[in-house]
Image (cartoon, rainbow, N blue to C red; front, side, top):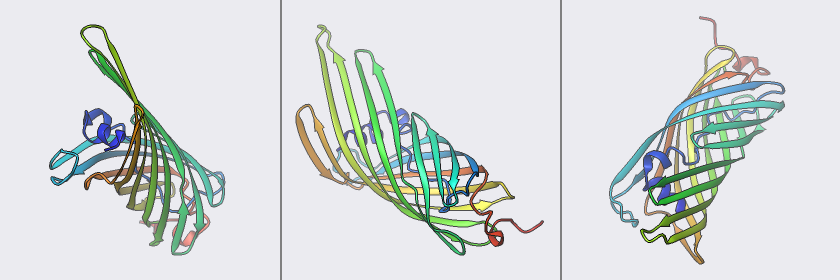
Length: 259
């Protein structure tokens, strides 16, 4: 099992699972228009399910932890925006690049890169974990009228992990260890963005991922592994977005009907 999987899914799940890289998107499959700004806040849960047949020795366990995210993005030009996201122990820079835009269907690439770091210590033992996830999502959106959009997509997340630990024995001897791993997560997202008024959206979203490949190097030794014995990582949230949304140039889909 890779370093990140051990840390996030097994050890001290309350702290580490909450600080794992985010798997959310929390936006439509359409980039903002030039000059538009959007701010999003989302309460979430993030967890992992480990089946009883898992080869990692932990049977039938499910871990769940709360998560909170805030995000902002700005339209550089019609069809291209840049954004930033903050969550517990981490941050992300990302973009939205519209490939197909308007009418009944949208398609966008939304690549990004994140960073998070966690340090912990207990008595004579301390450790740290740093991660650099690279997000490569392809988002599709079905426009259902008045700015509402059903969003779905697939995503690959290569994740680079740096971990270290130090322990001191009773006789004062200090032992240090460190390792690096590269992991690949594959999964998908599904959500529905409800347009409520001219500058407010509500979006429930669910993301499900599985670890596919883990390659690690620890203290001079290396190993690789396919999958993690059926482990499934999930993240669900409810996003509240304020501001522009890229639908202003398409009046048939931009404004809800009058009440």
